Amino acid sequence: MASSEGNKLWGGRFVGNADPILEKFNASISYDQRLWEVDIKGSKAYVKALQKAGLVTQNEMEQILTGLDKVFDEWSKGEFKIKPGDEDIHTANERRLKEFIGDPAGKLHTGRSRNDQVATDARLWLRDAITTLKELALQLISTMVERAAVEIEILCPGYTHMQRAQPIRWSHWILSHAAALSRDVERLEDIRKRVNVMPLGSGAIAGNPFNIDRELLRQELNFDRISINSMDATGQRDFVAEFLFWGSMCLTHLSKMAEDLILYSTKEFSFITLTDAYSTGSSLMPQKKNADSLELIRSKAGRVFGRCAGFLMTLKGLPSTYNKDLQEDKEAMFDTYDTVHAVLQVATGVISTLKVNQPAMEGALSPDMLATDLAYYLVRKGMPFREAHSCAGKAVYIAESKNIHLSKLTVEDLQTVRSAVTFKIKYITLYEMFLDVIVFFFFYESPALCLTRMFLQCGTTPKALNSTAPPVARPGVASLLKLSTLELGYKHKNNNHSLISTKVSTRCSFIDEFGILGLHVTYVNYY
Image (cartoon, rainbow, N blue to C red):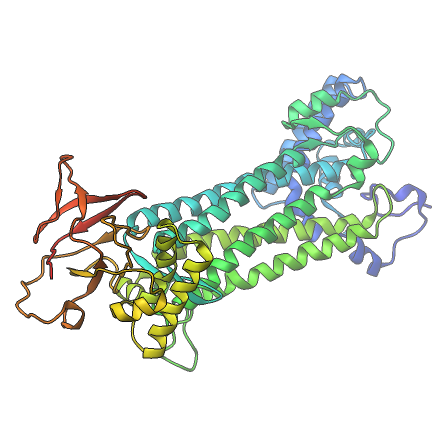
């Protein structure tokens, strides 16, 4: 005696009803109902292939298509009623179709298994999901690029091992995360190629014996290719695993960005401030402004990692072809999509609205961060890098032992670093430089000027200096360049060459044998 629950797709072989506990345990309708639209889409394509194969009449095909449209309308209007016997979305849709059109609905599943049906649904759904996530990722990248362009002149410390390393542009930091996201977009596009392969027509395991035109199905469903092996098509979920890994990698990148911004938003750094729209407060401490948006971005990465690792463990233990274990794919896929979807939107909002504290960023720059540039300059002058690195390190050590900035070392101090080097030091003062720190250079006897890789800028013209004290000791001097010669050639915008005069206000390019770097000098004074 068959089950009295006639909407089951597999009840004929069984006697009596399933245990209610098992029915609840076995059912997936609570979450796979999200596939309702693609399930109907796949069924509409399949009935056309059935009609071409002579398995349904033209009239029956039209009845089924009309009925599926009615099912679609109910879902789209939120009027579809799930019944207790609706084990999954396939069962629910076919049950409702039968209620609309009667017996012709029973022909829809001819030659089709839920194995190839659900694999087709999952691929159709994930294909659309990938398109949506790609658009959101590109929007975030665009937001980063736009912000970087606007704030390109802001400098800040760059960190390695969470220790100050070298000066960088704030825009360089932003674009480093945009670059990582661009690779995520590339990976997503690559995954889509393997997602967009059609398994429909594979049957349960051994294919479809009814001469179904799979090329017709491919065209109807807009797949790029047709699966080549029915066992592989119905029993593999590597395309889901790839997507879960993609989500893990994408959120790894965004978690790293969030961690940086959380630190930068603390009072100890004060580099940035989140707007109230992306912050929360404390139920006890009135002064608190918490970066919950960033903390949740960071935490969601762990959630997606868990989905990926858990599903891979499920796949690891399976034998060939379809097993019910594969039902676990959809919750992992849906949850990863929802999580990444939300994170990308929140990250875009945070990046587009945060406020940068430029004085705090530039105030955190220090002269010792240019020690690497000192070593690079010595290399360009012919010194082996290991020796140059050692010389720069010794200079740093001397400055630290004297508790002074590296730029305040005397000529005598420098000569103890490497006595063979003859220093002829002159002073040029630059006021309100873009780097609000003392910048220094060590030179051999050479007219060449080697600047850092950064563009340095001055602000407004300062008042004339009347004091005869050396500029390194004079209050108000924002920056100091130690140069080896007064003969600093520059290329003016009209391409004329001359020497720098005592007062210059023009954007120019200093030239040496190592290349051209820009410098906007507002005021120059020789000593």
